[in-house]
Image (cartoon, rainbow, N blue to C red; front, side, top):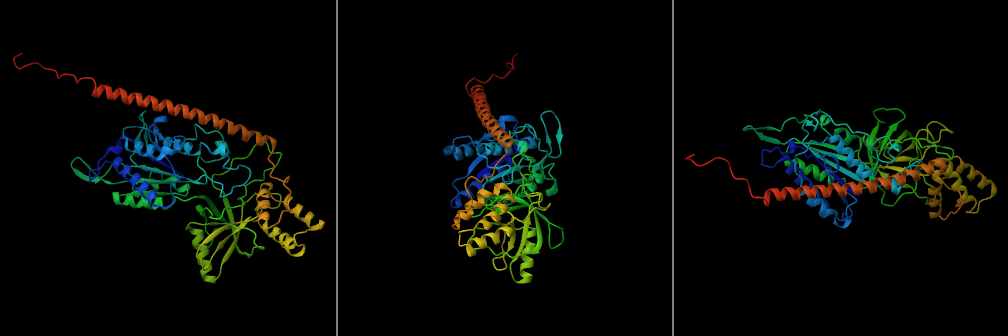
Length: 494
């Protein structure tokens, strides 16, 4: 899992707190505490670390994922200790640059599976932790910034395929330091800090990515917040749940985190459009899929041992509402889920691709993913196993082929794999999720552009580090090699 830190290194981070540390020292201590917590967790040796600051350009990239993986942690620690606070960079630009670094390799690995649905198990989970004092910033050009905005340029290759600059497997957690400070001989809160969470610099990006914004008054609060974040370093994705009609018992639950399944997964969440082999381009998708649920109880029975992909919901309004209903009914509650426009030829809501299941005993809520239009698939599978004993006749085959032709084609490979796990090898290998020639060419072109972009980035970063090293050596030479200039003024008798 990737963990990226964005540290505010503007001059205001040199402000000294009432307990003697500068805000930058507090930020470093918070990061070190976070790393210590991760090291205590068993099996957390596979994290990659990225360190960015609010400095402009390549100077703001202290370590990156392209650095030597074997030395990544050591490089990160060294870069963290060497941070100083003196820049006038823009927080929005710094956050955009950090997101770009996290996203840079996605197109080369095809992790986003554009036009083929979104499988929660096919992800590159990342967490971005931003630390700032929230002071009003003044840029190098003298512009005063009272709020942060994310610029959309420069854009990564392929960024036109997603509306937002982040992805569904990325969460931002922000730590806003409002520690008591010392200035002009009296104690008080450090200047220009927001009075509430909603005015905090990174509140918006933390909320929409499913992360969390912390406004902190003490160093102890910082350490507690860091501990809370470290407990959330888990693989998963963020989705939006919407009911047919919002009520007290059927709420919206936007930016809800789904924990990755420990048993793998087969089926995707469908696209909000139907790809076909005549498309010239793919429409841009939202970073997080919007899932519509219908609060009408249905049967959660599964045919035989057919695999069901289960993803646990983190506590949210929908989870609490379903558990409350399950408690009142003294039994499990099951509601179907849809993605509108996923199969517009049939109806605007599309067809169900799974359900939400609230366990009365387990006190957990799962998003269960199944084959698209599974209520039409279950009778076919029941006949195949029970009536035909896995040896279907012509009528069954025709009915099954009709079903396959009526669902998004990108479900077919997953369905073939799932059926094989229950001993059914009925879908020929030549039937697959066909992408149009034009779209395939576009995605291939974007992948090549991304590879070239990454190569240029490596070169620019290497050059920037060499120039910085030369400046450090020159400064060292001036201050430690050349003799100091003698003070002016003559003797008393002049």
